[in-house]
Image (cartoon, rainbow, N blue to C red; front, side, top):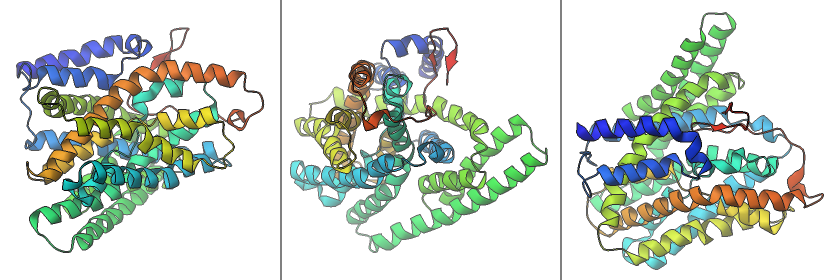
Length: 429
């Protein structure tokens, strides 16, 4: 109980100084990972968390489900109308290449883990998280077109990566337990998830839209309805043996399409709930993964993979995906660097650990590589976002007539932040 009291106090203190910490390039994940390490078993043992605790795992999984639904339902494809090729290149060329290259590197560095575990590691660490590089999206010196492409990428790539994680996790579990027909099992999970997602997203969106037009709803009831639909998509899929994360993501996409993008304001409540819960997820990551890794013998192989994952494994595929786009080399490098690994990777790691036995080459490799990659990303991307965004913005101001500077509407800055203050003291959301 003492640990919960202390952690709740940390929540309050962080909320009181969030804007000030933003200006110092100190992000929420940094704060709560450190809190988790200090409160966890490796240091003070005040926070009694366990990987086998069903309430902990449920909170962790529901957090990602809420954010997947909210992101998918509110991504404004209208903002990139006529310029979809940048985010499309990142999502449909860069993301698969990142998984492929990450798999190859993992097999080379850890051949004993096997290619299935290597592919799972690469899939876990492929999604990016805008929250770790928030300064990019709030810095108007960075061209809108670039911020918009990275914003759309980070909103959709965790959902797109989910089927890869589900597929390779099923294969690794099948190899470990000697079960057969892993492909059939993965296909069944994905198929059932899609059925639930379309049912919840389309029916829920149409009913809520109709109720809204007839004046049957209130602002608060719409917020609660969207939160309930997000939970229903996830829990309904899990209840019938489907993948809850795929259901939440596709459910959000179909909900957004069926409501015509008119529920963005009401969806912010679901995002806020997810934001609050994400603080707990980062604490769990610090307590159960970072603390033990830092207090035992350092694994040089895992650190090497982490460094490569944050650099070459991300930046080379991004560079390939942007060939022919006419962008400057410093823009390509900027977009490649800002691929921080965040909440989705943490949750995928926890789900993987839940499904594997706590031993063996695959288990150890996934825990070590994922922990080091996410930890380094939290620190280096969080600290570098502001300074590098400023430097890149200054370079672009004198760039003249280049494709990056084409006119475009400001993107909606999404999820997992408490807001940054304007110079006049008002809040930016």
